Amino acid sequence: MHRYRSHTCGALRESNIGETVRLSGWVHRVRDHGGVLFIDLRDHYGLTQCVVDPDSPAFALAEKLRSEFVVKMDGKVRRRPEGTDNDDLPTGKIEIYVTEIEVLGPAGDLPLPVFGDQEYPEDIRLKYRFLDLRREKLHQNIMTRVEIIKSMRRRMEGQGFFEFNTPILTASSPEGARDFLVPSRIHPGKFYALPQAPQQYKQLLMMSGFDRYFQIAPCFRDEDPRADRLPGEFYQLDVEMSFVTQEDVFAAMEPVITGVFEEFAKGKPVSKDWRRIPFAEALRKYGSDKPDLRNPIEMQDVSEHFRGSGFKVFARMLEDPKNQVWAIPAKGGGSRAFCDRMNSWAQGEGQAGLGYIFFAQEKGPEEGSVRESIMKALHEHGEHDIAKWMELQDLVVGKGPVANNLGVGRTTVLRHNLGLEAGDAVFFVAGDPDKFWKFSGLARNKVGEELNLTDKERFELAWIVDFPMYEYNEDDKKVDFSHNPFSMPQGGLDALKGQDPLTIKAFQYDITCNGYEIASGGIRNHVPEAMVKAFEIAGYGEQEVVDRFGGMYRAFQYGAPPHGGMAAGVDRIVMLLCGTNNLREISLFPMNQQAMDLLMGAPSDATTKQLRELHVKVNLPQK
Image 1 (spheres, rainbow, N blue to C red):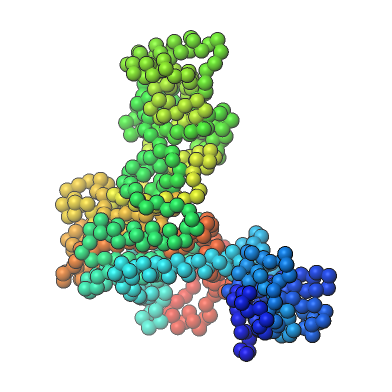
Image 2 (cartoon, rainbow, N blue to C red):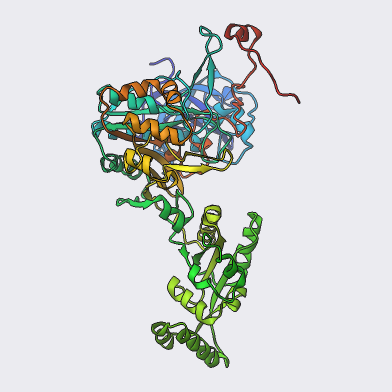
């Protein structure tokens, strides 16, 4: 028999009854049932119930076992007594009657429990990550991650892609975040950079005559902590293709991503026909470039209903042509209590408030006169069809300060255009859309959550397309790249030469799922003159382009194929499929929100000898 085990802790079944076996693993828990000890023994593969009674020669040692001791147990497989089967375990019909125990690794007092999935302080969990990873849910998340990556590789190879590995030590590149720099010992005063992404290398692979590249690539960005990205490093499914249009990239990648989601969705529906939403439309309808499409709310521009109206706050605001009023319909939100709660939430978000109208059925002696005034107002506004419609409907009126000042006619037309009924509400956001669209998206999400309109039991995938090539950087007072600087502008060199840069769209696209951006890509700018012009608009001179992107610039001079690709965030995809909103729950050894590795003690001080060899002097900020 093997020194440590004849079977794993997840392998034994009824067919093994009567066999003498050897198992090794961790003591998951010990239960004392009237002097008979039940020990759940756990390893990577599963859990087996082991029984030690006072007649066993192993009983004295078994009494000393505690949680997380590593032990070897010998014994005989037997059927569990009738009525004690555990159908939740593959080994739930058998148990081991233990005759011998050997302690392979004793365990001290645990700083956090392994049994169960109760909440525990994050700093303790990260410091003792090796214990945290033994917990069932987290352990399973990590194994799901392994299987998802295997599925990605299998599907990419099935689409004719080849896996290449690109360098980790490279040159600094303006990818939109700070680089991690690595000082060179051999070249004093010079630095390598860890790649923010393999962007230039994968494009150079296309210049080199390879065709379909992919890689599960580590990426490094020295960013401030973010809720949807691990500090320091993350992994992406990196992709590049030659001789392709945007449509070719979509056709290649949709089945890969859809297939991965369907394989690991645990029965939740996955959208098969992906919507394609232009960037401007996404902001306009959803207040986000990564909209959660499980939420059915679509915002509308209702400026015309308020222009010149009795609601002076909005009417005066609309005298500035750049300002607009957006409506957020809220089916089922038609109560003053809910509307006031949303208004308070908006104030907590730093806003002055959130205008609203809620709709109710008008009953009682006033019904006739109210109906008559509404009909009159509708006719005055030329809304004869709606007036006729009103004659056939139960009387529904708008409530609240906005409705009182807007007037019954405009309020009724507004409700009709938004498709709202009694018991519904509508919220309003007003001003310069460039300044309020993010808040409007938050409000849309909040309404969807509060009214249970958002369907949590499905995955809704979509392409966001037609991103702007450039944006205005208010901090630096200059035009800057808004997305990927290596993307091809729509209209090519002619657009770069003849169009207002802020009106140029790019062949850039994202994949979104349930409110997260899970992939980003583009068709690349492979024309040397267009590349120089694109960077010139963003403030880079030709020599700077040559100096910083010399390899790619030179490659474009010697026959560059049209090419494009994308990168999908492995961590975010795994997070969604594991049903968590915390990336630390799907990563092996993550840092905390201060970008510190509490387990290994990184970052740490360098020794004087190390600094001297690297020709580096530390200049710490004054406290």
